[in-house]
Image (tube, rainbow, N blue to C red; front, side, top):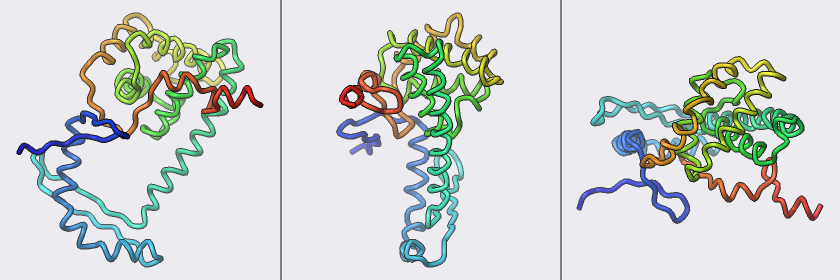
Length: 228
């Protein structure tokens, strides 16, 4: 039987990209060495000394280093940093929602989604991205992690264009002018083409754009807001 590798999200079986295969291969080859440190890992989480083990394995694409750390303080620090960045972005998003550029609730929701993806996957705030990083986020990462129809491309770009104008005007967004040009002529067709391309899910995140349309800013359900 031919081995099969695929991602699982809930009850869905997802296609994966070449990098996922490379990472999985490296981890599989390193497992015998990693398992040998199981007792040390348990001890580290029980208050014992931390461990930091690096294993080099020969994969089909060349040597790869697999690192085992316990306890995973770096991961916790990264989570805390993401939380801080999300809180800073929330302040910007509230100001945007109160600005004429962001008065449309659909624009505000789109900006919230894209900002959250930037923090969770790139560990960067949207306003801190270079033009190339923002381009990658919008035209590469976003179509891979958000389930949407090609018809949504124009409204997404409209929202991000409005947010970019707001950030330029109010917060001197360095990459803003160049990004506005990237979001101009041809951008809608480019994003539509990416959405239509065969999907390779390289990130452990899927967002249903239609489901998010039922949410208000920062995840408050409309029904909850109405009850308040």
